Image (cartoon, rainbow over all chains, first blue to last red; front, side, top):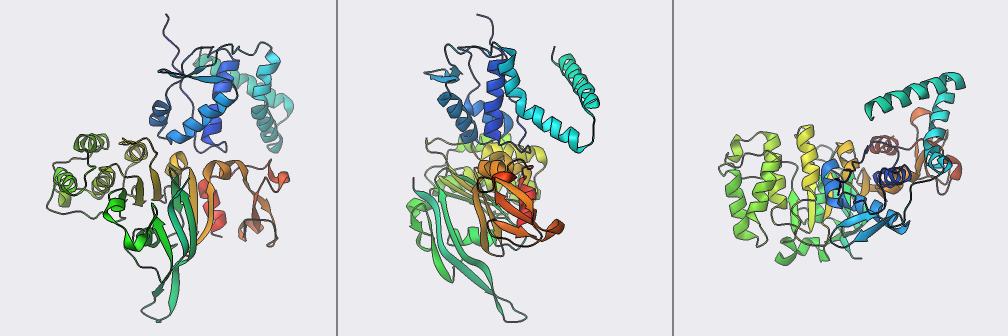
Length: 136
Length: 279
């Protein structure tokens, strides 16, 4: 069996999004994008809490919500895995829906700064390009 | 779920030596902190944070009202509850001639729950030299030792008064991890921790308790605060807000679940919230 991709969360406590929600949304995106597939293991509550120096209850809360959503399931002796039958979002549209909150925030910020649509789109393209270079 | 910490009308006055006037240090504090909560106790200097912690522990006597820790009155705690409490005072209370390990051994002699190997491992994680006498430790290391001692017997309820003030950022991160470490029981530990280093608290707290001039201003789940508390401009105090601040032309702290029009506004960090609540 090939080694499982190690999932690491990007957690930023100072964001206006609660930490548990940051974890929920990242798992949703990783599943939708196909980086996490059915049966893949998630890092243990303890490991995530330890790594980011956050409250284990926060990680539990996120995992429980994802379990209730049907995206994760608890497997005995293993911990949390992506639920059987969960598929990556087939259509680009579903993935775009997950991007919506970030897009709206971007649009709002650009508007507040008086940036034209053209300028904003160019800046976005540039940001996408540099992310792709960093994470080939 | 039972409350780990409860207070009813807890009040304490202090006589000012110069004017002989009395002023409230704690003013009718009402509290009910559920078991397993990790509560950040936040407020300006002089807000009453240390006095509240000392009162809860029975180290200071209130003039009115009462409080309970793990179900027992603060002023009459039995040994069976004391054994389940951990406390580190703002100024570490250590024996100057004893080194860290000797402190732990002293503790192990008194408290049945002390697990020395775990405590030594925690000290190592915090980079604390256990062989050095307490009077030769830096203030930061004294604080670390106080925290290791407070945690050594795996307490069910931990009260920490400004435990990280003298620690560098890396040590503070390790300290935050330590709050959840050394837990051998299934039930999560309840923690009340006062600090001015709010970005550290933001990582670990489940609840936050804002204290101002001896009163509880706001006690809220931190996730809820991040998701729902917003500031709307308001030139003067109006009904329907949690607090009105005169700063920046007047602003009203609201819960966006009651004021849906505020939902699109930017969220507040703990520092923003503290500022709004104290202006």
